[in-house]
Image 1 (cartoon, rainbow, N blue to C red):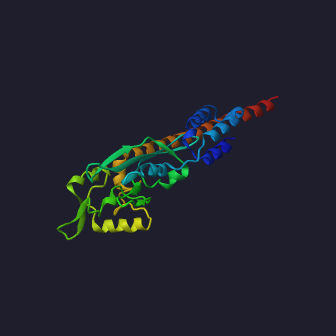
Image 2: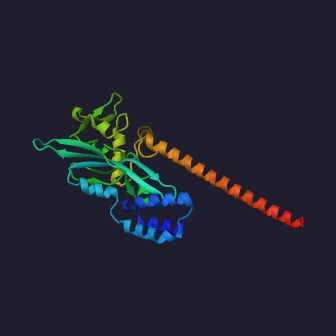
Image 3: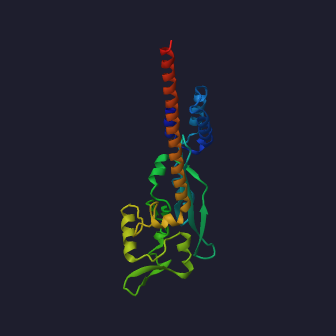
Length: 275
């Protein structure tokens, strides 16, 4: 019966309306090891009523931010919860620009969203893109939905900076003084962005391929991400340890039950043999 429920939960899409019921089911399973058959119908009905077919959070956020001339939707964090029924969660960092009424300049705003539930498919789709911009809009109104390092869409834009020349003869990007804050705001990796790096970025994005930096420093497996998103990796290690501990407990429990069962059969045979 639990397999039927698990399949139904997957079909339902792991939406927000099911959170409370899933927690109740987790607690029931943890206590009893199974769901009492008398409430199966009620649980299925509650799951059906709680499920919804809305758009993924990134798509909804794109709609909410469409009124602004520039924006970035960054995967700030992600996690999974639940032992019997997995809940997939995303947290986003939003950066958007508003045009000042008295001038033609822009003011930038940032916000960290609450945790938002996503489907398992959506979670797997972005599993390699922690810390990346999942969607961006630039001043020309162009929206890109290819994962890229946050802030890279401003590189090469002469409204925000210029290409400077190094003594070795190469070129690197330099934000103007009034936009120097953008490197920190977008949590960009230290070190200059060279012309070759920028060209590789443009080629990837134009071909709709994710770009993880010249040295693969961005994304879930990137060196920069591992330094700046430590809580994600700490939770991942803790969850893996807990999973191994539960598996070990199950093995010991089965071995213990098997030993008791063998002992009972042996005593039963000895008793019959002594009569």
